[in-house]
Image (cartoon, rainbow, N blue to C red; front, side, top):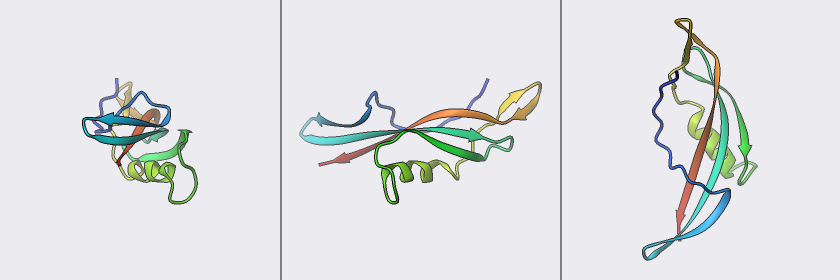
Length: 96
């Protein structure tokens, strides 16, 4: 069993959608990453599974940059940490 804490706004959106919250209109975009967690808890490879805005300066790059230096609790098997993959949704919200 893997235990880790990540504060991420999770939405049920695919791509970007306009949402009206009280008096403010917002745009929410969801990038989904597949992240390799190494035995020391650092991040290895990152694969963008669901892209929103690829290319330099885009949301995909921002999502990758937001997790590449994070530490995770590695998965434990037979009392030893092992390399594993997690799926991580990263949500962006812009208030208009």
